[in-house]
Amino acid sequence: MVVLALLVVQLGSLMAPAYACGCGALVHDPASRLNVDRETSVVRWDGRSEQIVMSLTVAGNASQAAWIMPVPHRATVTLGDNALFDALESVTAPVHRTRDHFWPRGGDWPFGPGSGDGASAVPRPPGAPAVGVVGRERLGPFDVARLTATDPGALDGWLRQNGFRLPHGMPEDLRPYVDRKWEYVAVRLAPDREGGTLAGVLDPLRLRFASDRLVYPMRLSRRARNPQTLGLYVLAAHRMETRGTIGGLPPEVTYAGRIPPTGVLGRFAAGERYLTALDQSFPEPSRINGDHELRRSASDRPYQRVIHDERLLTAGGIPVWLLTVGGVLVVLLVAALLLVRAGRRRPVTPPPPAHAPPPLV
Image (tube, rainbow, N blue to C red):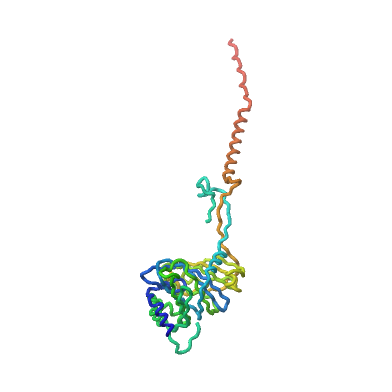
């Protein structure tokens, strides 16, 4: 009860509608603005346990917010490492390759001055309370509470009492998690400095929990008011794929391949060193109908995006097309001159002599 009272004091001032943001519900003061521009997560799964490191990029003028995420088993929560995402971005970056073209294009001479280069849950004992607080930590700018619930209405009521005013219909979305005895992570977000606002890339959070299947919670995102974009990095023993689209566009594989065991990424991956990077868009979040479950792909075929930098084909700095066309014109001009010259040298045949008319008789 002491922990609960402290949490009420900490979160009680945060009364606002909730907005889904990928795998959770985001709450902020209705007098302020807070938009989640992108959610990026890296998931590591070894067949028995799962880790999720999530980073949110937000924009607006909110001075505080809160975020709720369901998890299938009891989770531990720590701060993540921003360097992990830098390493992932470096590994999965597209490969640039130059591709020459013969005929000039829009940016090539004579159409432009450019050179043509362009890149384009844990079981609970009988009689346990409907909502329980099983842990609370202060992690940098975050105040983290870990909750259990045996009834979606009770969970909704507790969240409302503690500043998480969920939108209409959210308890229905919580029902499947409660029925499966999932637990919940509630996080209060605040800027690092007093008087600041939440903007840019927030510090990542790292969640760990037991799981015999690779799952990424997404159901609460169906209450989002704006289109959602998910960037998901998956580290496992093999290349992975989603079992379905869960109401979004088909996920796009942007990278697949094994990574080295060194560096921050290798240390996080441990023995699960096959990386699959997925991007997915949800133009109509209301169509989201479940959580992402991932499975092993049919093959471990590697993939990396290639960006072709178009370049005008040149020789000695001169466009080859110009040399070719110019060469053809020179040949035609020389041939014409030779024909004219040959015509002038041809001997002129004199006309036959005129015969005198026969004499008159």
